[in-house]
Length: 480
Image 1 (tube, one colour):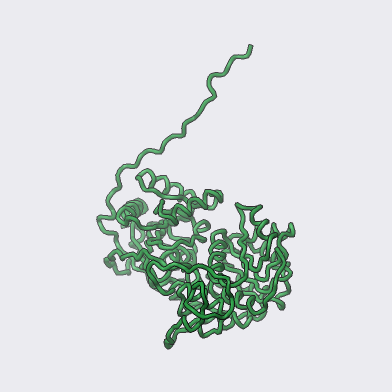
Image 2 (spheres, rainbow, N blue to C red; image 1 turned 45 degrees about the horizontal axis):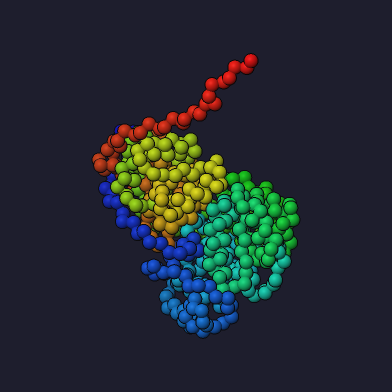
């Protein structure tokens, strides 16, 4: 028996039946993971009105809050309970949001009161809605008209994909307001972003640190009027080495006493606490409970295998899970590339997402995955952290992560918006030793099982990869 049996000798081996996956997902689950489900529901067309009106939500006529009724339930907070501006409530009604998630119920009162916050919340908890609702409410109350390139609110996030997702969510919530949200990120559309910042108002800027600092240096963006500052995924900022850039950006904003600052992180490490002390004034600390860090809609399975067996289990699961959307995580990009090549040799259509993939190819591969043209994505943690795609049925930890918080981020790609999902991890000769720390971090034991015989069947021999055709220049002519 391989090493995992020794490490987990005390664990009970239990049979695990594959869970049914619910394919349908809600709009904008990063805003609110448990929005009300409505089959085939589409958002109504935007209308320019921003004042109190009467009529059904999203209609071209008038709208009134009385047409958006949500029953009171003990122990649950409604968005009605926060006295939000009508344009914002109308957008919330369009999205089908009724009751707050735990982090929203805890954070919204202080966020709306203008207090600084430090929140521990992982992806999929609805934290994005907290800061978007708070800053949109503030903008509606202040009624300022900013100059081009001079935002009133600034949101910094570590990855392009997360910036794009936050901007998308912001557009959904701001659709009945006059506010303009501009996404700023590296790798593409340099001149287009400059044009959007220089032409017209820029109420809210959502940005990655590098591109924003570039624009600040060129005076395309001026930060002296920022009244609300959001730092999302601060722990990942630290991991990716962005904190020096973030410090320089914050140094261009008003003093911390003159702005509201909200910092969110999946983990509140001593380093994150020090950043909060530097950037916030008497911040309110908010945390989701440990058991909420991995949602109950995700079935978590750990297969006890040898290193040689886990590819068989992965291949057979992919083949049996037809028309599902699957992400496979590895720790190293070299390992991701080997796995990608092996799956392709077995006629599994998949895409590769690692940190060194150029932005244009990255966007194209994500779109292929989002549209369903490719059903399997092989990713590393840095590349996969910003993936916000609906309807992911399975997440594989082909190699268990070195850091327990990365386990939470990985499986957070599935089981979103109240849908079910499956997380499958492999405890091979090396991976078994990472399990105790992961279990301690998430506050629960993970079921360790032997894979069924059908999953251990050897895949067919793979096709040999094609050798690149070398195009010569023909015979060299002799010089005379």
